[in-house]
Image (tube, rainbow, N blue to C red; front, side):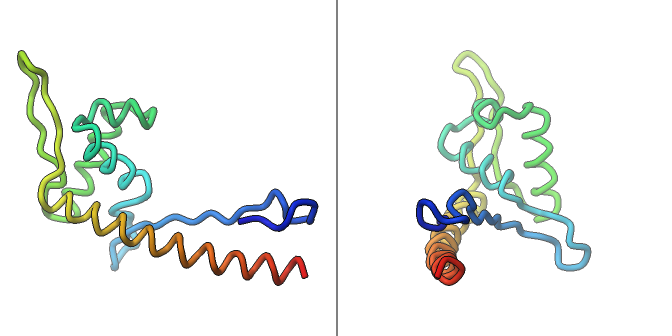
Length: 126
């Protein structure tokens, strides 16, 4: 999304994030980090593996999920303790619905932002 090679804007990129925040106090409910964690849980079926993939502690990963669930008022994941076959974590139906909607939203944002940024760089490089 940068300017053409050789332009003064060649190494500049626009980055954005999608965060869901509480209406009254602006407190973040779901940030890109939360969504990434939930996407990994959906793919890997494990909170531990998802935390490792993101290079964050299990404790931090669990806190991200717990705080979001508390604010939203519903569970995002179901944890099943280990045993002989090991435990797992899976998205609840509500968690999956949220992540599916987020994926769709992200695709639309990415497409729109790509077009807008292309126009922006064409304007400033003209």
